[in-house]
Amino acid sequence: MFWSASPAAAAHLSAATPGSSGPTSLDDATDKATNAAGWVQENWGTWLTSGLQILLIIVIAVVLRHVIRRTITKLIERMNRTVAAAQGTALGGLLVNAERRRQRSEAIGSVLRSVASFVIMGTAALTVLSVLKINLAPLLASAGVAGVAIGFGARNLVTDFLSGVFMILEDQYGVGDEIDAGVATGTVIEVGLRVTKLRGPNGAIWYIRNGEVKRIGNLSQGWSTAAVDVVIAADQDLERARGTITAAGEEMSKAEPWNEQLWEGVEVLGLSEVHLDTVTISVSAKTMPGKAPGVERELRWRIKRALDAAGVHLAPRPAPEEEEEEEAADPTAGVAAPSALNNPLSPQSLATSPIASPSKMGK
Image (cartoon, rainbow, N blue to C red; front, side, top):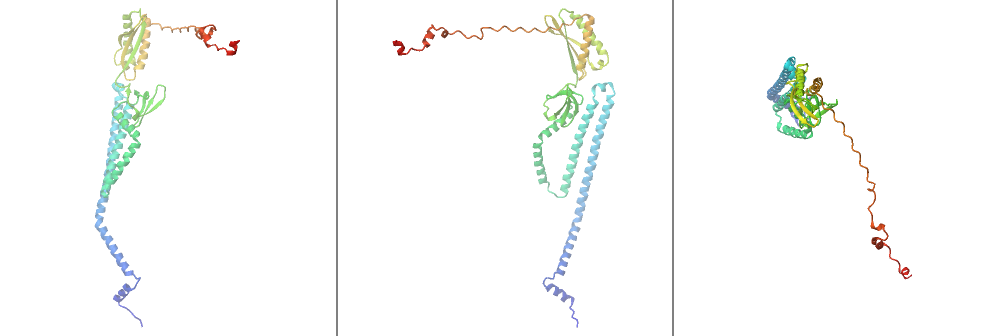
């Protein structure tokens, strides 16, 4: 005989039996699944909207960054092509340094591209975080503190970078310029945002931090002055010497390549020094930037040849002055001064003589 229970009784028996949690666990699981499905159903629209917003922000940032960087690159290339075209003309050959302009434009383009990328991607990152409902106040505060700490630690680097940016933007010097930076003097061979490379007169390469440069003397901007002093004998004909020097300068200004390097005619300024046997005539000429030393050497050469041909004699080189013979040493310099104690009969010597003992005095 088999005994069977109704479903209600079975359920009641299962619920009453200690340690049996099958139907209860199933109900809980069902409730949790229902709640999860409802939560997903309620929030999936928000998730989808946020995801689309983030995707759109990233796409816009990448496209905008690419467009701006490409625009800057095209602008720099166009500037370089313009400089290269001007380089082929006569005026451009005198006034434009293609390598200098190219490096300057490339440095400016690099700075602009870096700034554009930082601003665009940084703005996109902050926008994405705001879409994700992340509080940006603590993050921005931490970034500010970290930025201040990094700024104090790398202040020299920041100073070098900012100084380099302003040097390039203001075109204080460029490749090929002859400059005096205070700490070193030479020809600029490379201009960077942090350091500047100079080729010194003896061939040494100087690496100068842009932040350490307090003053710049550019000898290659605008124009230079070639100055020559001609020393002739005082008995020579000064008017003849002036005419000869002027003619030599005019001949030089018409010859290649000095006709391009001389921007004005050679000018005889007059007498700068007058001595008993010599006079000094000052000669000056305005030249291209950085070409004054070569013009001075050539001008001295031509003036010397012209004066020799005209019979105007230069002042002889003064003979070196003979060194005066040292006076003989005084033989009495090492002798001590006479003393009264050297004479045993002098009152000083008698006063210093020892007093005789009483026994000797009685004898």
